[in-house]
Length: 121
Image (cartoon, rainbow, N blue to C red; front, side, top):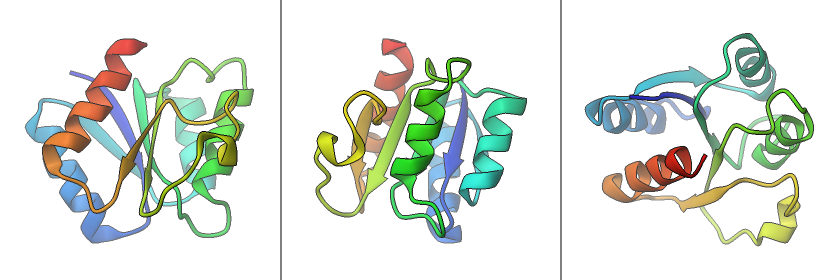
């Protein structure tokens, strides 16, 4: 059982992700934007982060960079959700996500990618 921070601003997508992850025995938490996500990560670091690439104001790549550049949070695996192809170099290999999931996603694929990132930690 892992604590998973889901960073997404689309309520329907969030509901589906929560159902999938809690159905696998995980404890999902939600942040709807960069500011609240970073506050949660620092207050109560999750075991893994599932982040949408297309967030309002600050995109998922920047959220990822900020988390990975901070020595206290860089160890947290990040899975980036994207609806289009993103090259690892678009977000920066050193400060980029640990894995990607393409949306729309298959539920089992989402759960497997998140769990693989968790266990590679």
